[in-house]
Length: 549
Picture 1: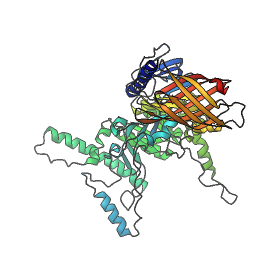
Picture 2: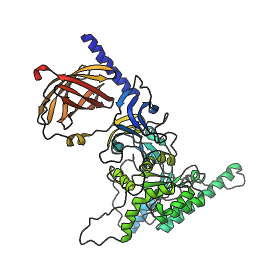
Picture 3: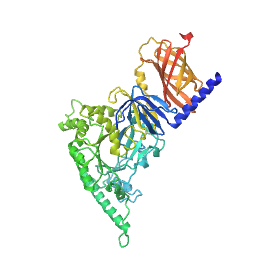
Picture 4: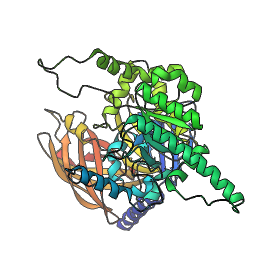
């Protein structure tokens, strides 16, 4: 009998390790919000090799899949943040500002003489590629994933030309593993350059942008003529900055204009029309004022969810805010709903918001001011993917697409919703709910869990015996869990809650330390519950031994 149990434990350990390595998962009996088609009330999604292998009501769960029980959960496509600086290493603190005009000029001159074939100063160099500045690693994106976001457009913020952005998935051990599309777009911000370098005014900025596009168009035509027959024609000079604009003039690369005011948006639309640029507006706080023109030119908007608010604390001595400032805040909340009614395509961006969870508060404010929930979900998923040109691989739950998914318990737009899991490129990230468990701690209870419990853990069709030794002091639990596979493990953060009990375990599995969450309920001397880990969710049940009854 001991030999059979030992072989069974070895088999279970091997199966767990192989499943974690192959990345095969099945989300079973969940509500599936496909976005591209009908919602499946009780469906199954199979994930294999980072892709959605199957989705539907009658999908068979593969024998090699780690099962996630989806009852009570809704699955959405992973959400998009369409304008960010995610994945960039923190820049070193700038040196003290030069104290004299001479030092300012020297500093500006040094910046301009960075090795390059560009004839333009730093800040007017569209050839900058964000991929060269990206760093890999899952942990840096935890906050975004914990709020359901799995994909982002990332670009630097400096300069008038911010450079070429990339679309990345918010996980990956290497930069190449993160990239979905690169380069994606050129980004332009209407600002001036510092250090006395032209342009020093916004009118100068608009003039400089237009002139660079004219120069790029001329250089492109010159190069075509020269390449066709160079004899007798002066050789065109190479200029990386102007050459970086060629894909834009050819309609192969869009330009994202960071523009919030009506005037800025109109200037961007004028520039796009003059040079036949495929334009996208980012920010767009007053986009509703030019909705008709955005619709006519088929220009989408990446709306910022970092809504304007009073920056100074109100006091009796403070001057009252201007009426147009108050009106601007109110109208910004209505922008998404107005664009929806006007038929203008739009997606959402975080807009540099400090508290990332505030995105959901502000989305609800937009819904309260005229935006439909259906349009909000589409703008977070398939609508964003369509604007970014990646709807063939992301944005909806369909067979063959990248497995970027988010699992939610409760109404997505309710305050009590809980994000439980996210998948990025088929990699599972389980979202810990430690704060929620502590808030549910019972103030008093008649249940006493002290004793030795003989449990059976169900893992992928196999049964694993376990012994749980608990000691309860008030609402606090301590003790150990013992199995033939994991040995004896001390429990931590044990609590008796209003719904039952919970604790954590650090299990040494395959040479790696893995944290799992155990939750359960007790009725008399009967215990049942679940064990949640990155390898899946397993159920258990058992009874207390007679001497402890």
